[in-house]
Length: 144
Image (cartoon, rainbow, N blue to C red; front, side, top):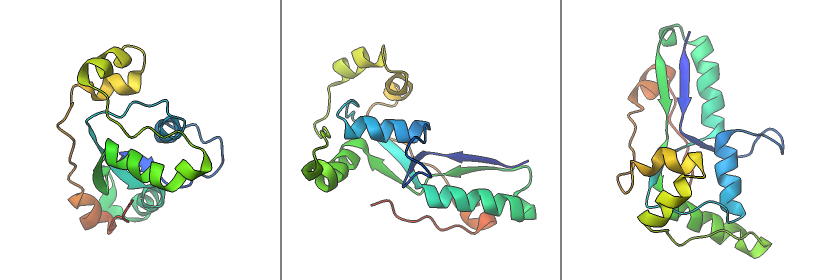
């Protein structure tokens, strides 16, 4: 068995009601219901996640291994600014200002996805995906 562990997955879902955590976070950003924190996310394109699953099945060396899929990291404020630049003219209310730590702490009481990253406030995350490149032969696509 091989384990694929993607970070925040971005890209076009197979259908409009995808219902996975990454899509929910991005949709909350589109509707202005996700606070912009001083945080950095690992991001991977959905096409790279699909390719990793395919390669994990067809590459014998992948058996029994765990692969972290994170093509790059991006500050949440930069992600929000990219979405704002692209979609604000279409009427989406994307927030681009960052919230304070105190307000984020209060919000974390009600939103589990905020609570899960509160301990990393301002630190960001970085992932070593060298095994994905070496064993699965995947070079991640840019999300920008």
